[in-house]
Image (cartoon, rainbow, N blue to C red):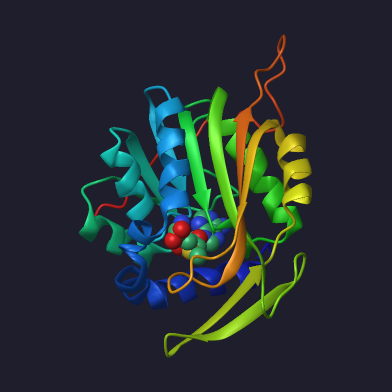
Length: 240
Ligand SMILES: C[S@@+](CC[C@H](N)C(=O)[O-])C[C@H]1O[C@@H](n2cnc3c(N)ncnc32)[C@H](O)[C@@H]1O
């Protein structure tokens, strides 16, 4: 995904399937009790302040967290996803790339990123994790979720999909090793506080084994500002 072509094809593919994706998975959380439990625990432990839902898709997780009283901003590479998300909720949504977040350093109280880093290669994931660390307040909590394996793809492998719900797409899905992602998050400035691995819920969602890493932004000592750069950027929201 780190190539410009990969970036463009991912964005175009999600623009193409955005409405269908929303129709298919908008109420999916109702059938995913483990996800609701993790998101609820995240909400309970996150102090006041903005929460970033990175790779938010149609915004169903953003809406769920907002239901817990959190101040959520959704962010996605796909403009089409942002449009769908804004139709479904009154929350703010930003179109941006997670490897260059348009957010001030330390401005975010908590961050979730569910099934979005799966489209990034290892170098791009390292850049994204550094960005997550940069924008989070020290001590801020993050949840990173991803596919680990399914019947067709083993952990560490990837597959490229060219048709999705009868739409032509070009999407690469990376199946990630939780231990390797933990190392990458630690290198970016996080401490692992928990990990939850689960089997797929039968009859709903893609039938993959999944992992959820719960990571806390390390509290820097002295003048250390962590692995991310300290570039100041402003949040912009989709205007229509
Ligand atoms: C499989 S969907 C997951 C959506 C939602 N988080 C969920 O759990 O249903 C992956 C999302 O990540 C977004 N995405 C992919 N690469 C991205 C990037 N570099 N920056 C921001 N979002 C990205 C896609 O546009 C898509 O909406």
